[in-house]
Image (cartoon, rainbow, N blue to C red; front, side):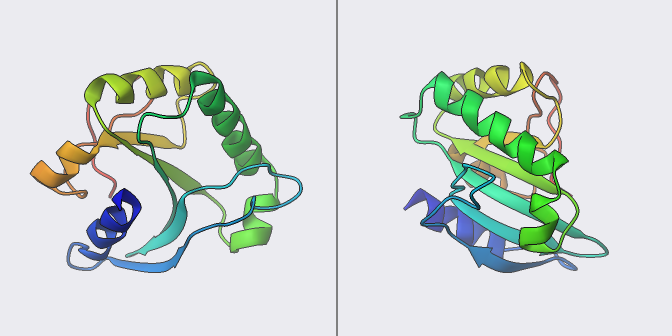
Length: 147
């Protein structure tokens, strides 16, 4: 249900932005990348922003987030992402149940990178919209917008 909610939020784009190519995954991305994102889409305006969506309901351990972070970084530095999606860069949007959970995940991610990942809560999206300045980056205190 929360993934469907994210889809609907992404469909309500600001003027000049389109959401295209929504995909969900039953299998890992490839034999080289052992990662099964919840979803992928592209946000098109003057540029194309490739976005993976990770919906966290509080059930994944720190070890799982360490592995996911590592696999996303492998995807970012190899040519596998470009081969699979015909794009050069991507972002990972993490949406979770609480501020506390969000900080726990982003602290885990920050041990490997301060790039690629953006995180927020379902409540923040419901309160301000997905397009507001509601996104935290690993290791950074200020909230930013996706665009």
